[in-house]
Length: 330
Image 1 (cartoon, one colour):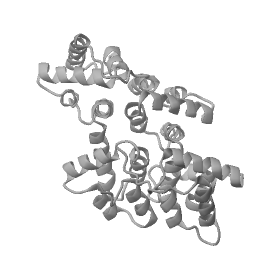
Image 2 (cartoon, helix red, strand yellow; image 1 turned 60 degrees about the vertical axis):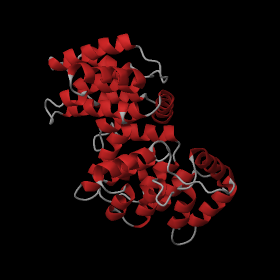
Image 3 (cartoon, helix red, strand yellow; image 1 turned 120 degrees about the vertical axis):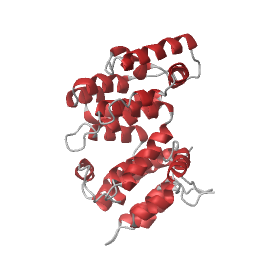
Image 4 (tube, one colour; image 1 turned 180 degrees about the vertical axis):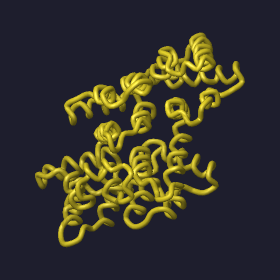
């Protein structure tokens, strides 16, 4: 469920481009106008704006936004632990095509300063099979390598063994479930967890290839048959990073809003906001399931997400985030 508010009457892409061109002109960038336009256009409309801007002015609007808002987007985004993230980062991510954005995020997640198995896992587990396929294509086009190639090179051991098939997956998206398989694979999962064989090829096969509907059936049977939800059994060592990633995979595949609500809470709770995590989640989920994430966040934290963001951010960055999460929407 998207939270982005689209006006009843949307100007033509050419009109939007003319206004954006004016926002870039002069001594100071008009951030309010940029937010007013781009934060209230859906993915298809933003794509048309990019195409029209290139046709009219022979320039890529992403480069214009980069120049006006963030001063070297590629370098600044690589610094995952910097506290100086601004409007520019979220505007640029938002303006990208979703597949292009995922390719960029996946590439950043393989770099030394910004490496993140969790970002790779999010992309692999919360996108549809088609969206993940498109992201892999965009990665190939942009970086002249496959995402699997880069992840294989930059990870080792169990993480490589898990992440490469996860990113390569093309899961069945339908609702059909085979209960015989669900029961059999629930027993396999339970057996491997009892043996602490968390990197076993069968456990990895099940988590990286089965449809979300099939996995839900398997995990429901696991819970009913063995008395625990699987993530409780995967908490044998709460400090083990691999087990933490396995639990996150299960959560992302079965209930992504719970995963993202927790990421947002952690990002806002930090001493100094984790603006990269906050930016990434809002920019990637605003057109997907942000309404469910907001509801889950409120339920778990007894405070609405917009209030939490307002208390932890400021200026144009706050305005952009609030617009994307639908602040003020009925």
